[in-house]
Image (cartoon, rainbow, N blue to C red; front, side, top):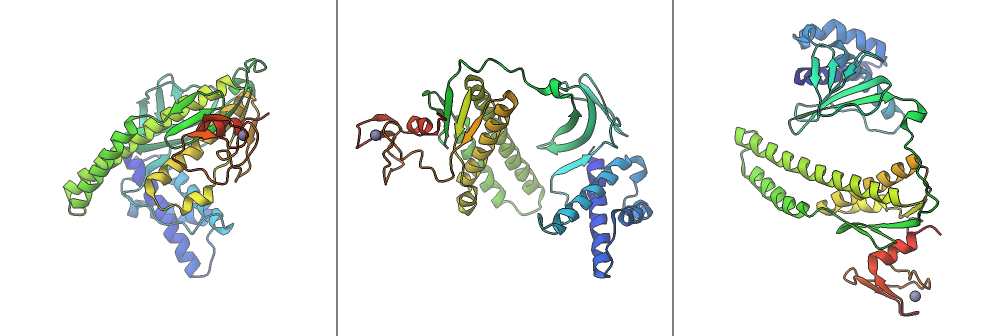
Length: 343
Ligand SMILES: [Zn+2]
């Protein structure tokens, strides 16, 4: 599988360089030209290519042509070469039905049967199959074309459930208008310390030495674990919220404002918050629960949920909201969640 990733990378880079040389000479090479050129040259640039599945190179060239299309339409910058240290992956299928899955096993062309950790949860025709490596673990992402009825999660009776507003934050992941809170997992703090330490170790090593590579792997591995813990807690909280609500109100995060933020840790937290909101949205959609998104600069924290009075200032350290107009007192995050609750 690692060799296939290498083959896909070589094919992508070859496609890129032949397309670039075409541009320099003033002719626009089509996908067909690039493929033909690659097939003529592949034995020179990748001597082991006959032992590889040609799907890997073919799909890589297709990905390159997608990248060119996105560049042409202004969505992306011009594609850049892939290097060894980047993400390792390749697309293994050759159209529908070329990859088979049987219980906990998957059959990949030229690789053979590979055991998987879990069974495929959906049944249907198998489309795109992407094999990738993360933190020395191998993953396979399998697209399944299912029937509509097959995927629809059983609609539960939602009439007797309340409408719920959800306020998201960095310390407390989510606060619901009914007062329940979902904390961010505690181990994260410990891991942040480990991250910093591993980062320091890495910076002290001679670049590209074997100890440097070891340190780099260690840092990447901690990053991976942190992301797994966070992903897991987000899935659990979003599922719990969607299960108990008949309607959900959420805030709209200011993404462009976030990107301006230079503090890395905060940036990561913010990025994962928008992913968390996306999770709530798609899980609600599957269950047919309506979602209300508040306007971008709606002051959910500053507004009193009882009388609607809006404070001009609210310090982050004020954990309890106290309204000067009507005397309403309540937890700061719960107050924000109530404001976000769809009426
Ligand atoms: Zn008030």
